Amino acid sequence: MKLYYQVACHVFSVELPVGASVLDEMGQYAPFSVAQTDDVVFSLKVVSAEDFPSINEMTVEMNQDDDGSQILAGHVNGQPYFEFQLRGRCAARMLTDRDYRKAKVLLVDEHLFGINNALMVMYALATSRLQTALFHSSVVSCGEHAYMFLGKSGTGKSTHSSLWLKYINGTQLVNDDNPVVRRLPDGFYVFGSPWSGKTPCYRNVRYPLGGVVQLSQAPYNKIHRLNPLAAYAALVPSISGKRWDQLVAEGLHETENMMAGEIRVWHLECLPNEAAARLCSETIRTV
Figure 1 (cartoon, rainbow, N blue to C red):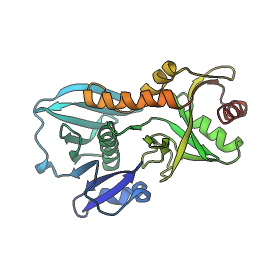
Figure 2 (cartoon, one colour):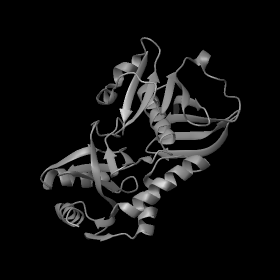
Figure 3 (cartoon, rainbow, N blue to C red):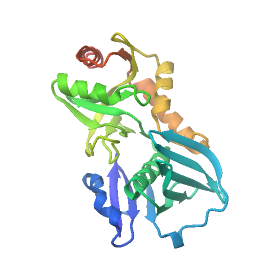
Figure 4 (cartoon, rainbow, N blue to C red):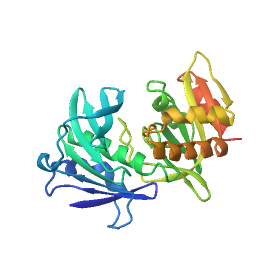
């Protein structure tokens, strides 16, 4: 069973065994479903334990831990290898080709968590050279544009989005955890995705990117615009990708550099209150 999905104008395919139970849990992908095509940025195939290569020795190059989930990344027999863990248990294993165009995935435990993480990682890597970036961010639309809120986990990205939804007329949530930014011929756009963290917001929409706001907690509300160098530094930590892979790193650098030069980036030091949302909205939407 082969399924096709389109996110930020990039199509990818997912092949599942007939009758796979995880398909019943993948409703978040339905808004992104498209017809069969040969033009895909990557293909992912879920296989049985018998069809997944044996893992005898792994070179670990990344160990990313976030809120109880963990991604181990490295190489097995010269090929990129990933292991996705939840609460200390392996959810899925993935082996890819060196160009991140094809992947085999073995679902072990927590199947939806495993396939979600496998697809997010493949998407981030396969599109990194296509002026596309998967962000860790919360995004709202207001009027004709969308605005991204960045920050470390626990900074208050979702809280700030909720304040816009409550106090700024015309605001809608685009995505609350993993939106996609892509540069098209007429500028940068931000897209909804099938990945939205703990908030079920899976909208197949796109908006011109009106601005980016880096958040930090403070006992006051203050906002200022960042220069291109500071803007670049603010963008980098929020973008997914294997920085030790030269081609991936070069692709992401190109996108980050263009964003820092073309998109207004702000730093908002704030409290979690109405005044912060209004200050932010009035500043970034009127420049």
